[in-house]
Length: 272
Image 1 (cartoon, helix red, strand yellow):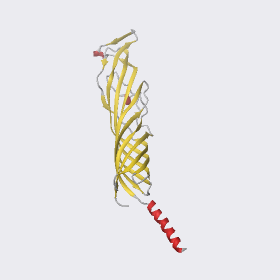
Image 2: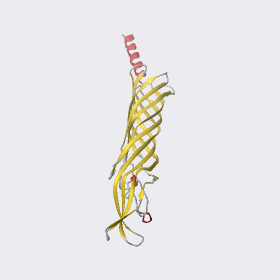
Image 3: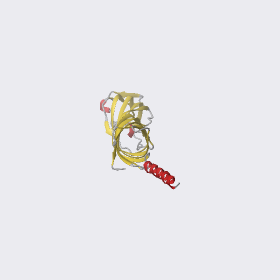
Image 4: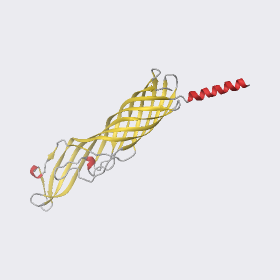
């Protein structure tokens, strides 16, 4: 009887020890997909474009299934806005006459590009279907710090004019007075706040050696906070200053959103 009990206890202890095997992994991955800094324009539309992501991470699995991961990474976003509107601003000309300065935006396009430096903290679940193939799920959050945010006008035109209500006339095509058609490319920089983003990733792992697993999967990242510092400036001012879509009254809220696929490698490091 004692022999059977010892054998049974040995099996249970062996199973528990096996279930608690731990490994550390160095993970390198890269991917691409639809990356959009979602915002609403008062007088236009916006769309996202393709962006990329690249990460180096460290995972610690404290059981055969569960672990945690952190690391560093970068992610890019490119968005384009198209604006159609007419702005009107009271002004005074060089002769002291009051007039209404008008800026007519016709299919005016501006492209914004933002690069984030990211630090994630996630939980991971790993399950092996057999000795080669497994499932890897990741969920958590990350902080994304904008290291570069620029804009460039890429299409359309701005037609400026001056309307004098006292005489009921509107002056156009008078460059000396600032009334002209503008098609030049404006460029500049934006200032954004850090983004706090939820992370969900799901993929498969394939064992190619005792220490190396290949990874391929999909990612879904959803911004939780507004990263824009809202402003109330006109898009185009009387003095010829172009402020950009995100520095004007046109936009008040920006949240990053990305979905795509990535591939990478998990390298076992250290000992069990």
